[in-house]
Length: 516
Image 1 (tube, helix red, strand yellow):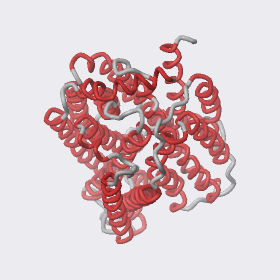
Image 2 (cartoon, one colour; image 1 turned 180 degrees about the horizontal axis):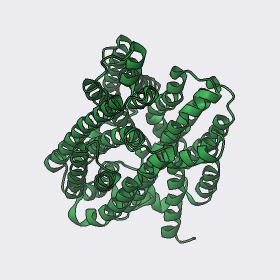
Image 3 (cartoon, helix red, strand yellow; image 1 turned 180 degrees about the vertical axis):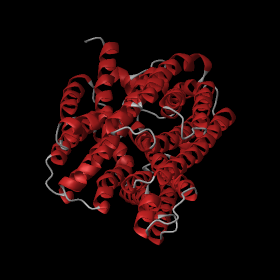
């Protein structure tokens, strides 16, 4: 354990534990929503805000969280974030009202907003360039695996315990992560602590929050919703102002902008971050849709839906391990291109799903999707992170994570719109009362419930066929995004992106590791 090489891998294990609970918390809430609606008397709007409060704070704080880590110490703030996450988990578990639960979900989002970029920012400090791809594969796998595991654990806990257990499950994991981070992770910070760019922090936070809120509202209320469009426009204006302010600061002799815009001159950073965002776009769209397919079409319960996601997890694990071995030899461009090719193949296969298709077919294309994610995501992250100096790794990591968060949010909203439009276009609702027809249009779950209540086999067939059509349309779009990622990777990503980036920052990274 005293060997520095062994110690840093144990430290990465501690970070992986904390990332696992962040991933779990993104999805575990979904299976608990029906119970929360009953036990807390929560309205539909309040149920939406249980998730939205978390997502908005998370998106808004990612950039300043990275800056504060660079300035005050990454380990110190990681410990604070873990404590926040643990306390908020207990608060959520014992919340007695919808308002209290929303408040603690906000604190959970704040903790996650620090955990994600700071856990990335220590990787260039802990690991030399030749070990970093493996380390990022572990990081990305821990972050991604928690997302599909959320419904599995949540479904099992709800079957055996009360709803608060889906939050309490975080506490022992956080406790172990706290102890391990405290004992194993060395402190690191910028040797030239950046000034706090208050204007940049406010503009970026409000801009990201406004854009995220607008996209969420548009996904739920339609893209013609005036309030949603106003929020999106305001968010974009604030972000444009933020970019202008950063450029102005960069021109000053003593200026210290929040984001070093010169990072975008690095092909590795720009295209690595963009391609990681495209993976998030497709991943969150698939994870949003498939549990609905498993429950409404295949008749699975919440736990069964989660278990049916395991081929995706298995494919991701295998793909990440394979990419870690192949990338140093073949280069980032080839490895990422292979990942997007596998991802596109899996998604296009899934788009051909028929109403009578069984779970075996879904498991096969799901595995391909997982393999593609495992190849593309860690390697794209490594290409982007490799361009970061240890001096500003925190805020650079925050920028990468903010882009991925936006990609996931926009993915769910846009792909949800595609799914709903295609689903509603195939429904046959002749003769149904307006209230029943409205429930069927709202969601496939509502449609199945109405059909069973009425005892109408034709309506049930219509709902299921319409949803499978909508899912197929959405997967064609996801496959198109993956195909675009393949083309972009081959056209713009340097073949040896990670190596070139390592040569640029390797000396400063080695100096800081030696100092630690």
